[in-house]
Length: 605
Image 1 (spheres, rainbow, N blue to C red):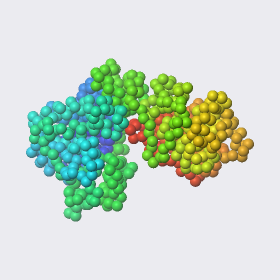
Image 2: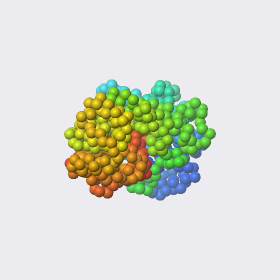
Image 3: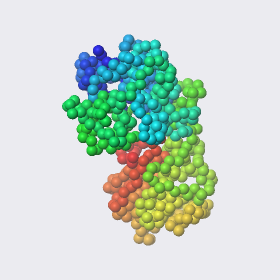
Image 4: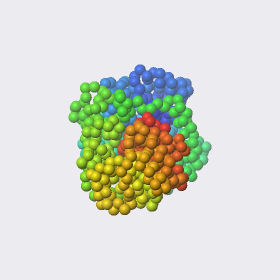
């Protein structure tokens, strides 16, 4: 009997899916796979299917039907591609797959499997259960956990795992497929790790299809809940005192706590940290012989498949190349829920959706592991700015972090809270060290550097204006750091050279935030390198401006180590000698991107 599987992936994850299919075919004589690729057009389906069949090379054992989103959803495909990111869209597409299979095939039963799975045994047991019910669900747990925190996680992510779901052709399954398809169209989003402000109604945090599986046993007849954890073994299944074991019978089928594992669900596993069971449940399996052997083989198979099929996600940007962020997607969702969709494709409606994205609440982000300081009282005129009223093409309006300005001059922004904390915590690495800031505006950044404990020279031509100089002085005094700061009214690099030559000075820490137009940043970098101590660290702000990057490139060409910090306006760091920069974790709620002039730089993560 030919078993029928349906699944979905973007082109960026086809490799993982092909490894899964290959692992199933190692145990099945015949398999029919229905594959939804969410970022191809209908016209591309046949050619891609031929390439996949040739790659797998399984002869008559595999039948492949490749579907595109427009085959399942018609004109709504474009809307869905904008409405959801690729992770969400794959979950939404499951509803379309089940409905399509019900309406366009005569298969008696089929099983949905996630792409991030691996099969170690025949699927006979799962399909036997499916013959006895209409809808087959896979429970995350088979008994109450030890802590309330684990129960809260189950409530947040759903009682049933959407990675394994079976349907047997029946009236109950048909009703379910239609209902599941309809609910996921507008409510297939993932809110669980997003800011509350991104929830359109702020009533309920959804986790894609898994939230909608919760009421299924209540709504539909003949539902079977599969509790055998070895059938769909994920990171939620392994107890704290359990380990993977390979069976002694030589089959190579792993087991955990006496449960043979048919399907291993690699939810949250990442090849850059293969020793971890999951990025979300950070169980370290470095000392587990089975895990080391399996992940080594799995990575080799992934790399081979990726080399043949990997393509970047096609629908990550507007037609003009600007990235579509999660804030744009949620703004469009608001339009859809209010029946106010734009007349043209959302991918050609950037101006409208960009303005709507500003409606979402902004917030301050404090990177984990960094000490926090809040000298806000020393800056009584500091307010959150309206980024939509600023004309600069390089202000990253789509980043949801608060953008601060001085109410007396709302067109010029300060460094964000996160960026200020990078300055403060970097200064703490060099207590008492001489430091130089090029460009201070009204002293917000200088204050954080001085609070970090360095002795600071500040160079800015605006300091020759009494209103600016008085404001900076008052703020630094109010923060208690004026005695560690010297203010110099002058242009860089001339003023920097004069100070260095006159005082025979070299600095260990620099912050470059002066002119953002060429050749200013490059000249600032050159003067900093000339008068840097053998052990020194140089920070840059506003690398989102293309003319700032040559300064960082110059230091790299001179042998300095360099790295990027993914912040609202993008910071850079260069260092040498006996100092190491901060390791920075970017805000996980943001779909980060880099402009092309920064693609060659490593990013702190």
